[in-house]
Amino acid sequence: MKILGVALVILGIMALLFGGIGYNRQRTVLQMGSMSAKVTEHRTVPVAPVAGMIALAGGVVLLVAARRRHA
Image (tube, rainbow, N blue to C red):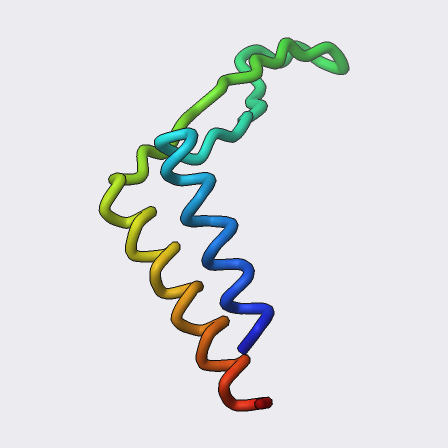
């Protein structure tokens, strides 16, 4: 439960700071025999600030619940 809480807190903070999740995708655009031309595209998946706040709050709740459970 602690691990999930920490993961949600980190994801929530990242979503609020960056506004989305970015990744690179490499694809082949031309291939002739053994030669090929590849393009790297940078894409961003937008994440709503509300989703970041919900993830952050959920992570905090899980961390507090885990702490109370062990105390």
